[in-house]
Image 1 (cartoon, one colour):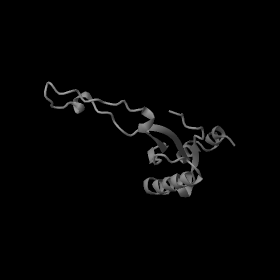
Image 2 (cartoon, rainbow, N blue to C red):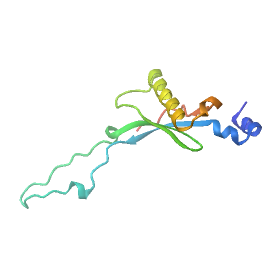
Image 3 (tube, helix red, strand yellow):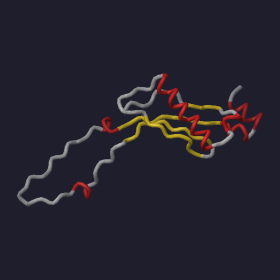
Image 4 (cartoon, helix red, strand yellow):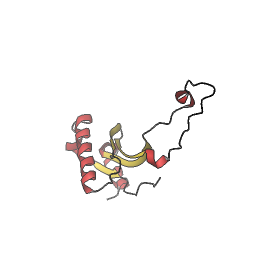
Length: 123
């Protein structure tokens, strides 16, 4: 049975069961603004050399789960780790605890997990 068929048969109650998840890359270091990087120095002093950071060195994988009422879980994968079965199971356990805390009774009514399984964009 497709989601549209379930929605047609059950109505809005079906939408209350849906929990959606997706991943994205997020920057976890905010570059300094010009004002933040200003410094007092003598007029004869050489300017400070700044090295350009590569964007990939400042990104981390973030997985977000939400339902029709709002965000349920924001989970960050530690740097230099990959998503494997163990990491995904840990994320799902965190999601379960989050649903238990934020949406009491939702798990006993049943949920429909809609998680994008496409590979994250390489960046």
